[in-house]
Image (cartoon, rainbow, N blue to C red; front, side, top):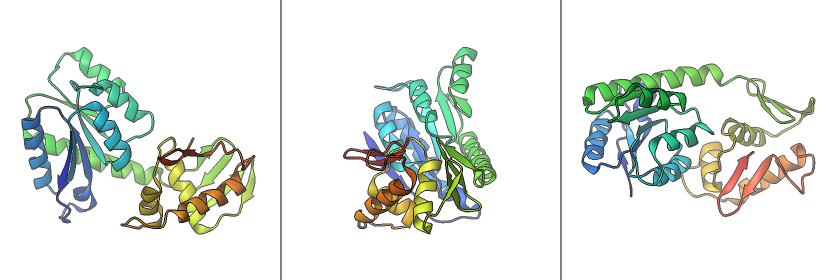
Length: 243
């Protein structure tokens, strides 16, 4: 079961208030109260009631923060945390009724950034979320210009340059934008519409052929064997990803 909702109005706290929160909680009453509290703060809230739905929603929505209960149907919170951490550094706040040190340490070792034990106050929850988002924004700003290495490619975001086996490759602006976006989300699959939204800035279902053409051009310039691509991969019925 998945539900969505939230407020998008800007507030005095700036961009953090427009953040999308993925709430993963199987207790409907608690989930409703959490959604209401977060929406009042201006956040957009996506809700999933089980781990499998949460993983699908995470991959589709790319939230800015995850509130994750440990005890979940289908995929438990610890396994879900591990799965998210394989491809993302999104802030994760664990919500748990288990208050033993072992459970808390395990969650943190799997990649959670913070935890709250139930019962907790809504004020504390909102404060923790706000702190995690602030930290994520400052960390992202620090890392935004760092060079990226993808196998035999070297990408320099600040200089907008790409090197293949040490040799410079001339890319058009949109080709570079597409490559950089995929490199910053390495291993994640994006549909054509998602790429149009994130790279081209479309807020509607645009002409997906545009994405296919740019992927083909990137493969011709970057792949060692463009007819058998190993870097930019097509995921059938899903989209594209950088392996």
